[in-house]
Image 1 (cartoon, rainbow, N blue to C red):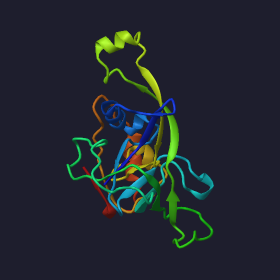
Image 2: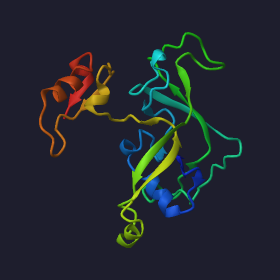
Image 3: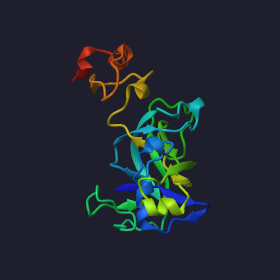
Length: 214
């Protein structure tokens, strides 16, 4: 299943399927941490990308487990080709009418249980952000000239503020204690080697037996 963000331009729905797919395909590091396509598997690790309730430790960087998703009653859980993307299998189910997700956050500081939920299971609702998008990769040179080289638009995106947490950067793992993991110490292309990029991930684990270094 894939949860699809809801994008609008000037409070209007986007009529063009091609433009909609282009916007949904933009990496979440360019869309305020709100992914266009969010592929999910129940029980997968997830990372919160927004500060929802910092006093309860439900904030940007919190790591949890996806327990369940809840949709509108009229959500048709069938293939929706209006939102399909070639990187996903043809039988993928696209969810467009999400109410909230239940996420287990062991570090949360809730003092009482929510109705019918364990203390560490928290409902995460979709968040809305206004995002400026550059359309240069999408439009043709002729269209660019018609727009007088003004290729940016502002969209309103609504999506769950979570992303998969199968891996994370050194920056995101700061301050965390992780039960186990694999560390890649090879710096990315065009990046300088930094002692902190070695020390920080290694110091996230309680013993050498709980980590492997590539």
